[in-house]
Every structure is written in C-alpha cells, then in structure tokens.
Length: 210
Image 1 (cartoon, rainbow, N blue to C red):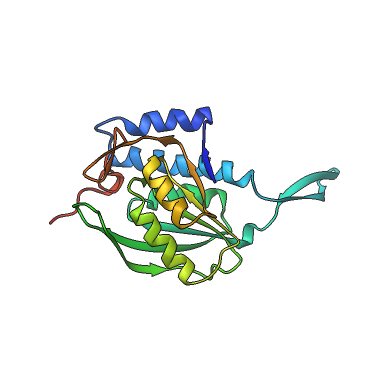
Image 2 (cartoon, helix red, strand yellow):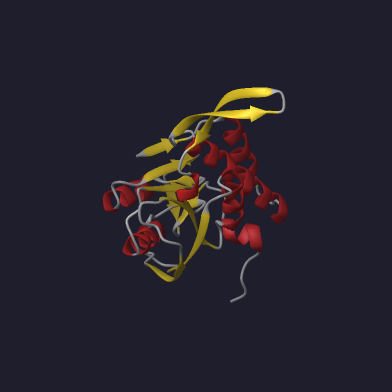
C-alpha cells in the first residue's frame, strides 16, 4: 500500500526542508515536525473506541485510539533520528528500536545492516522511519532483519521523499508494507534522489570524517 500525503502543512514543510544551505538545527526541527505530521496521518488509520469520562463539571463522551501500547518505532541510523523524535511525540507510548545500515557508494549500492536492536515485534504495529527511499536497498535489508525477529501485525514505512524504483522494490519483496511519503521523484544520481533534499544525515549532523 502506498499513500502520498497531500496535507498542506506537510507540503509546506517539505518545501522548506528542501532549501539549500539550511542550518542543521532548523533542518532537524523540520524533520521532527514532518515526522509528527506523518504520524498524525498514520494514527487516523488506527482503530478507535468510544469512551465516557468524568470532567470537572460532569461527564463527556470521547474516543480513544486503540493499540497505542503496541506501536514500535524503528529508526534507520543516523538520518532518521530527528524524524523519529517527531513520531514519538505522537506515539509517546511506543517502544523504540534502531537499525544501523551501511550502503556501498557504487552501483548496485548493496547494503549491510550491521547493527539492529529492536523490541519484540510479534503482533505489533511497526513503523520504520528513513527520510529517503531511493534505491530501496537499505529499506529492504532493514525490513528483512525486522521480520527475521518476528511477525508484525502492521508494518509501515515513514519517509519524506521516495522514488518509484524504491517503492516497487520494497513492495516486490515485502508486499504487506504500508508506505507513507510526501513526494515521489524518479531521478537518481549516484544513489541519491534528485532534486530530493540532499544527504539528510549529513545536513542534520554534519559530514563524517573519512
């Protein structure tokens, strides 16, 4: 399942985060806000139940989102960290895991997930955050590692920009996955999306020394 989010606030933040020369702090703030906004969109697909509660002046009817205790958020290091901060603002009860993936700089851009530490995912609602879904190799490798450790009830990807190539590759290998993205762009240059928004990890945290 693919959902391209057209929320006007999300699209405004997507426009802002693309601008060349952003300061790292502002870039991280925008990533967190985008993470929250995608989280709200996803929350609207979750089951709810009616509740009655006592107020200071009487009783009121309302709703409660079910299964919030069953959410697991997985951050693909390091680029997704600010985005996950925003997601966790929406799903404050969620458990948290990380996956460290290394991708080759040359085609076919093979990926090794060298580290993964996640809670129990069996029958859980698992959200995997990575700002860019380019070739799909990193996401495919990460999803495989997650599924090696259990069978989620729902498995969703939150990202900011995706390519058709990456989407097709992920759904070909993991047909049950739900993909939430803000934009689809189809030009890849050296494994990066063009025009995209650049290297999210480097902009957010600085370029690592060689």
